[in-house]
Length: 352
Image 1 (cartoon, helix red, strand yellow):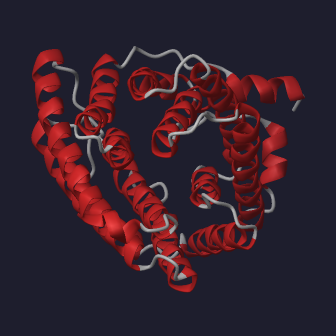
Image 2 (tube, rainbow, N blue to C red):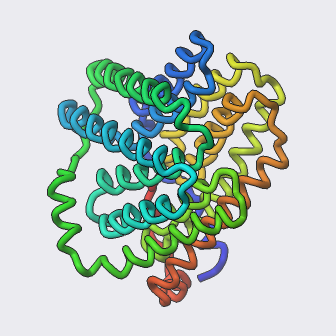
Image 3 (cartoon, rainbow, N blue to C red):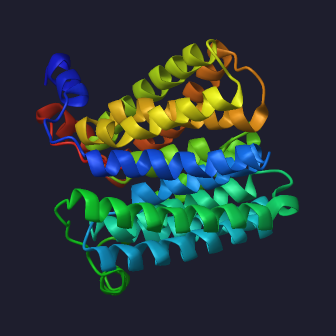
């Protein structure tokens, strides 16, 4: 297939309605914990609440209100337990690698069996890696858990108000219990699950060998790139690289005009508002706002002005390594996928 068609297939925007309820909910639930942290002079801790609110919007599938609340309560519980496990495993790379392998294997078997369970397992893995890779997390663990809880309660309140105000259409939500029963009994998915788990664990090991400060960027990228089918992994890699690089540069440009707490919270508000819109159009566009959002939160935690070139370089290298591992893992799982890639493009699956 000509390169032009591949580029068009990678970066074309999907026409869809503007998800106003999701955009409003995302901006409120990402920003309100930061405002509370600013008032209490605890902004570095409050970023965990803001990130947790953002993770909840990515795991909220906008089904009937009662099902949504049940799903989010389970999500809150499992993500909190995953963070606790990661805190326990901090500085124990061997046990962290083992935990990552196990949850990646289950996630690999859950592929194509329902996005509700798939995303939940994905973010459980990221929670473990984040806590395990954050020095001194145990000293602030209970304060962070308090912000997690406040972010969850804030999310429930905001979604209830928005649900009754906008009255948006409900989406189908599959039963996680029934889905889990199906994936356990599926032997056909074992090959992909093993390759998937080995590749992500290798990413974790390489991140530690190379002393990458935030190794979960590498592992998270590998997880995200490999989850679609093998042909789409190339598109997903290109989208993530371009979106991340542009998002980091855009955020760094914004930081030249203000990096005081109030300006940073306003930047987070804008990035969080447009992230759901970008993700409905194309993964690379959504990644611009996600990358910018994360940079703003990192700026809040560090309190230092960010060097745009250095940060763009570091983020691109980390994401690039994760993309490379994802493509290699996809090739090992299905050596014929490069031939399929040459034949025709397929519809891209938007996955966080």
